[in-house]
Image (cartoon, rainbow, N blue to C red; front, side, top):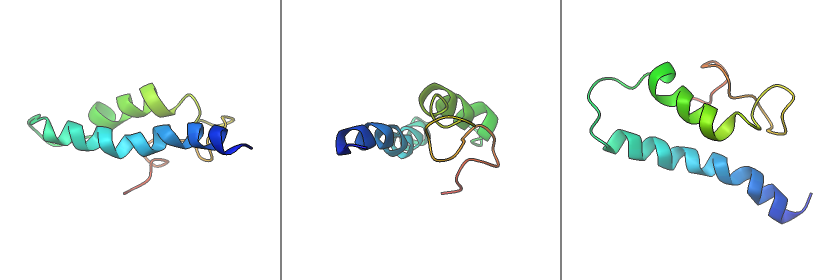
Length: 69
């Protein structure tokens, strides 16, 4: 796999922490929950590739599958 293709696959994963940080800084009241706050981001950006049978190295569909970082 070429370096350009690999970077193209990794780029969305690198964007996730930035999106989460910007969401946290937006001043939204209340506790962050997976289903309300994180899952829509994963669905929009990650789950096209990160699903069972996708090209992503692991699925990111459920709370249990999402990394705890």
